[in-house]
Length: 461
Image (cartoon, rainbow, N blue to C red):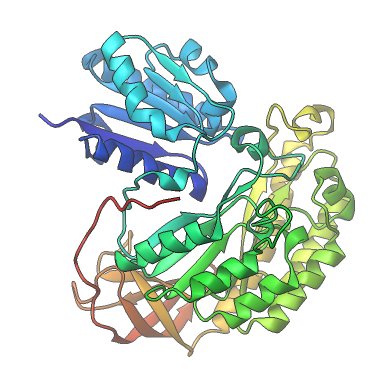
């Protein structure tokens, strides 16, 4: 019988895209996917190490898998991703039922490592310190037909005090512009209409390319992709505020496909804290670039990341963050409690940790402020007609469809059963608002996209 695999992903969109590559590799190796871990012959946990409880999540899942493996000794368990890259042999030492451990730089070896472990009956650990080839050269198995991620850059050259990404992902490497465009063209031919460009700092794309000659900037890449037939929406994540250039803002305004959404991580509104975080900008500089983007790009939605409780954060530091959030008036924000990561500069600041009760109170105040602005911005859209891209039925109510506007706002609306398939573009009128979503009524829709599915597109890179 055909063996089956299950991939469980933790962390960011980069990890999710890596999981697509892993699924593509396993499918190309003759395995079939399953949504039930109990039915799998191979289980891969693709890990993240950004948050403090990442280790606990991993070992909690491994504990559950131990009982499955005791019942089915032929079950293979693999751990990959950022936590595997960081902890290496520690995973097998703590969980001796794990068969394979691989890192962020050797996704392509996963099937061979599984085969070796199956042949020898012994654990296999392979962690490389740099990529052998750009991961875009690997096959991918996408979960949806109309949307895809495209990696334009791996690694990071920044030195943010709280971030472990440069340690587990390595230095910044940009992908050649022509290779990115070629992959986008192939995705468009496969029926994809929305792509998201991925990089740890997309704004610095290209600065490591073309030594001694013309170097493409991120703005050049946006314009090149804008010319690809069949692509209707282009998104990107994440940009770094210190590298947000006027050329990028201009390209966002000029390119018809580039969506009116900018995720611009603030992290803190305190200049003292920003300096200790090694972020490379001040609150004033951040707000100036945000103002320039809003002045140039009509109807721009702006989201951000915020850290509460960075070591040594005082009441004055937090009040400065609230002041910037008030002025920025974000459409949404992802708020995080600081968690120390071993190996980072901030991870060693244990004598300056903020009291937990203080952090919780600050988080509550910040959440209230963010939601107040988000609701006001959503209420201002009531009565507007929006173009939306249908994702499918709402998770909470199958009779309601969920879709996204160009500003990446979640929209719910009722529609006749099976009338609109995922990937359909429709026009809706906004009738209600909440901090995290919009309610609307369907006006009309384009013909549903082709049902043709190509599950494992292979792209050159």
